[in-house]
Image (cartoon, rainbow, N blue to C red; front, side, top):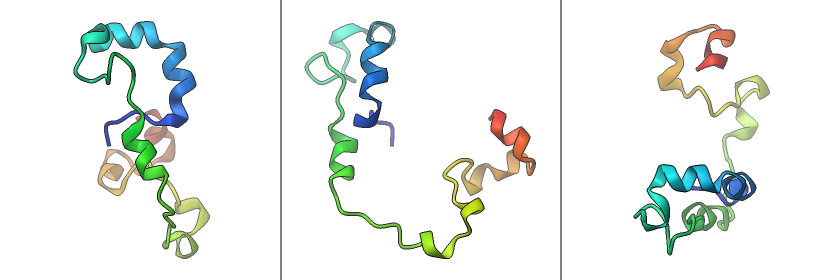
Length: 83
């Protein structure tokens, strides 16, 4: 998902000037009324989702990055940490 999370609002607001310049100022189509839009991720966070696989995956294997598709970058944790 290429959307802003409401969990990142403090960072987004603190870096608003640089980010707005990157996005094309307040007239950017990536903004909603000239403001960052958090509604997409907010709608997913509002669902009572449960990770049904959590209990079946070892703690050291519960990572979201790198995803299995990126594992070919390196099998060494130190190298992947730089990606």
